[in-house]
Structure formats: structure tokens, C-alpha cells
Length: 319
Ligand code: R5P
Image (cartoon, rainbow, N blue to C red):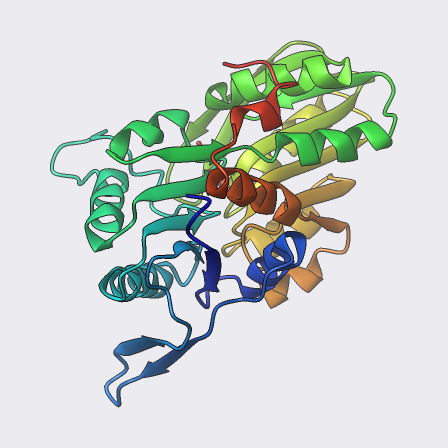
């Protein structure tokens, strides 16, 4: 691919992140006009030439999810029809990922549908960050490079030099991740048994491990309604935990997160910039946003020059 010059485009999903990635790559963002027909349908026209080029399109499918998704698809089609040599869909946050199996009768597997339509629209490869489940990679029949924000988050947490630390997995699905953080931070591990009662209601029932008198770190893939993280924080606080620092790769922040988080016994919350911050997040006073632009930019550079991506994560144990 070295023979094909790189060009990077951004949809409207997260232009701040796209600009930061381009600064890392020392690249201008490719020019495209995104307008609407009078009835609201989107029209995209490329102003930069992509013929024979190695094209990267940065567009997370965060909220408004359907809007950003359709824009991603139209953009991919547009680039393909303009004769790009290769198209990488950079989807830092992959929406609809949680609907990844038939956990009841007569429901869709929307995550698989997303993989199908992104591929049919023209993506030759995909670059994603902290998918809800690693096995979503298998939903794509094209190469998918799966990055994790762990190096960025672990570095940040290490700088805090937290003593007497326990990493708590806020649910069983998070156990392997929590265990990696515990190893990286030299901390103990505890696990919460969580039950989801509805899309918004979470019941955190029991803890396996010791939290009394310990400082706590909790890391999830996303904070959406914040039911998981605030329920877990309340439970460990009730059991005598000290300082609580909680975060996630994707700060999705959907209602009622903006009421739940300020009211929870959490001393600090951290997320990355895979999703642009909802302006209502200003209500969360103790919120820190860490950038994954360098991580994504470095992965794009490596994809372009056919270098290993896994070497970027060689410090992180697999699993
Ligand atoms: C669940 O399986 C995920 O890892 C997250 O814990 C969950 O999606 C967070 O959602 P909420 O913030 O709405 O509890």
C-alpha cells in the first residue's frame, strides 16, 4: 500500500478526534461536502481526489446513532465509487454492538447486520476501539484491527500511584479486562454480580473479593446510562471502600447518566474521546477525558505501511 498515498476523511460523528488523529499523522483532512436535500436526506460529495489512494474514513457510530451510521455508509459508497485503492472504515465507537446474539425469541442480531452493511457499503477493512465483545471481530469477513484504549488508561491510572488498590469488575463480562488492569496496576481483583433488570435499571447484588478499606478502580467498555458503574460504586462504598475512580473507553452518556453520575460516590470519572462529549456532561464535575488520537493515528500509520498492529499492544497480556 506504500505506493498509494494516504488520505483521511472525517464524517460529522467526531470531527475533534479526526482532527487530532490528522495532527498525529501530520496530514490534512480530505475535503468533502456534506449537505442535505430539502427532505433531510444526506448528500456527500468528495472535493479531494481519492483515485488510487489509501483512504481512511473516521466516523464513529455514536449518537445520534442512526444518523452517524447512515452517513458512514453513504461516505463509504461515495469513496468506493470515486475509485479509491483501499478503504478503511475507522469506527472508534461501534454502535449497536450490544445486540450481538439472540438472547430472546424474535429479536435481531443487529451487530452482525451492522458488520454486513458496513462491508457492503465499501469498507475493505475496519479499525475499531474496544468493541463491546472481542468476538464481534468475527462478524466481519474483512480484516478488522481491534485496538484497545488500555495503554492510555493504564498509563493515566499508574501516574496516580494509587495505594491499597483493588480493581473491581462491575460485571462478570468485564472480569478478564479487570484482571489485566489489576496485573498492570499491581492491584487485587474483585468482581460484582450484576443483573440488568431493563435497559436503564441495574441490580448489583454481591461482591466476590475484598473492598473494605481499599481504594477502588473500575473500568468498563462504555458508560451509557451509568447504571452499571454507579450501582457498582454504591455497592462497594456500602461495603467500606475508600476512594473510587471509575471509567470507560466510551463515554456514551445517555440519560439518566447526567443525574446518576454526580450523585454517585465516585471521586473521579474518566473516559476517552472515541465519542464526542455530550454538552450535558458539564454537569459531571470530576470528569477527565483522555485522548486515543495517538493510538488510532499510529494504527492507521501502521496499516498504511503494512506494519504490525499487535506490536503496539505487546505489553498487554491477551485474554
Ligand atoms: C455491559 O455489558 C457493558 O459492558 C456496560 O457495563 C454497559 O453497557 C454499561 O451500560 P450502562 O452505563 O447503561 O449501565
